[in-house]
Length: 114
Image 1: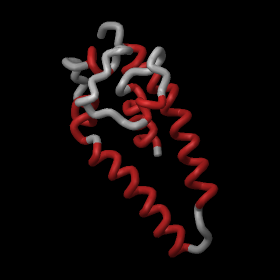
Image 2 (image 1 turned 90 degrees about the horizontal axis):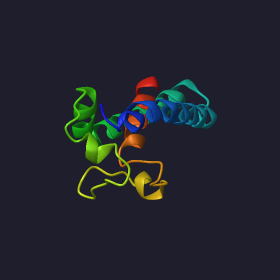
Image 3 (image 1 turned 30 degrees about the vertical axis):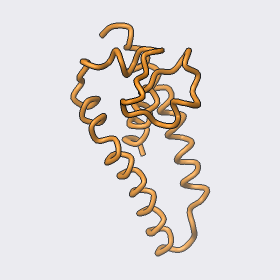
């Protein structure tokens, strides 16, 4: 891989830990009491993970199959393409440090841990 190794591999591993621990904290601190309510709550949380997967299926396939043919657009700073699968997070991120898809990879890794 070329310059994109940091944004595709290294940065997402670190950011995924932050996402994971933050998500687990939120899930645990909002968990209701009672077996029925807890089961319903966890089912709702699992549906959120499934929805993210379904909404990003094409990118999941690209990332999971270790493709690299559009890495120059996804994982190089300053190369975002509005027509690609952009999250709203990208518009809030520091473009000097973030690429259009590094956060999405981190989210995939975090969701796997959850």
